[in-house]
Image 1: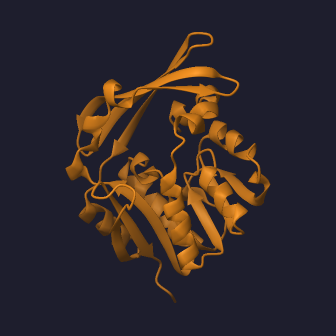
Image 2: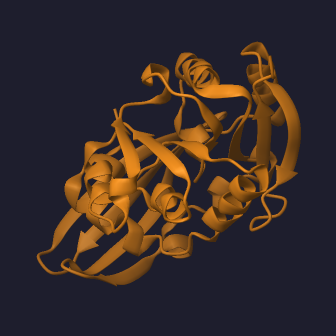
Length: 243
């Protein structure tokens, strides 16, 4: 089940406006272009920003996400008709064959349970053509990024079309590594409604990720730093071996 931040219709509708800096997606778009990928699977596509971006550049895209409210936002975006939208997760994908699969925005960390993570890797593996590549990022636990998740560091007020001014901040509720649980709060000034959403992320060590990928048959081709967040994240390139 998706967290309220993605499944609550009012929160999904303001998600993009409260997270407008998606420079990380241009990094992924460059990876897609450099790989010459013509068919892409976007796992955890959310409100569809990346999927629509790629489709607008002539890429055949399927976006999968369990949150209906987020997919409703995605389907209203200009160009969304070029994307195949799938409600669900990577463990139950329809038959497809793609050149490249992505999990942007630290989606990999939101797949917390080991069985679900393993199922995701298997599902994506089946969807990749021989020689196809899975690309995703995850935060380096050594950087202890959750220590910056507090009201003082994250508080913002944004003016959102059709919603008015919205206050938003995040704060950590529990750290029991490898799991970190935090709460987002949104205050809609127009009517005073206050909404919250609790989320848990899994901070996997690099060797844990590589071991999981190898166990599902992938070959880890490369592990990079995220160019827009140097030293803070691992970016994994894992290939399904060519036949």
